[in-house]
Length: 378
Image (cartoon, rainbow, N blue to C red; front, side, top):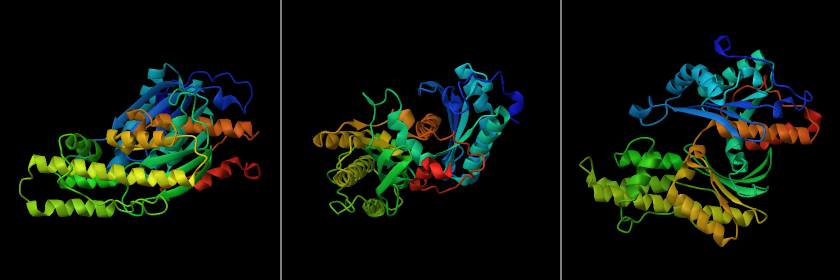
């Protein structure tokens, strides 16, 4: 369906088949949840074009409905690919490779995005690179220009989003160690649930942050689950329950705005305290870290960023977080992860990745990515 409307054009010149994918632009697709996104990156990581469509059909349900998301991706992606190529001023034939998030995420959306990406790759005779969505977040800090002087390995990644809350040692492309993660809710999930309790809209993170600016947290103390415990696992379920208990006396009556704002501020402070404490423990577990990086949708929260920046400075480390538009799900990070993967394989003398046979998967542990750099498996 896409192929008939794409300006295929002539293929880009290349010095050799092994170099071709990284001597020409990469088109990337992100569809792992409820944002449909495309981007085109030059081989050096320069963003030539990026487009994102955020779905609104989930708002009445207060959360993402997988079937609605998959249908919306299917309806949007063909036009979005063409729009992105037009914005970059490129025919599809100028592409060197096509990449798409292939896991983890909502399986329906992943099937759509990977299917469109594979179809385009086959039509153009280009490699298809299946990108691990978490790895894409992990490598975003290495986009050219984001960190002054670059982001050398190893560094500590705090991934905080609607579905994930993890501390990850990023030791190289394809080489990651999970140091700790949530044992119940993710941070973004907790923000969404508290926002719902406070009568705010979805997604909850921006709404809670905006309301918290008006509030005094002091009258509404909340617990800090796992604070001070060894390791760097997270827990937010008890915090969510504590918020519900603060709101219980108001039953279903109108909640005074001052009360709602105070609880929002207290909740946000508690999340920042919990995350800060867990990150300090993670840095203790990773003494060779050169940088602290935050990524994921919750990394857009200004209070959390300020807390992480302060504790990084106390450790004598730089702190980096992507621009707000690159914190949430986006295709720029997908394209950059594909470029990093192709470069790393080329440096090892391995052929370009071609993942046409790799199936989308709702779970894709990061520790499986190292197999891409195993010469015996190439």
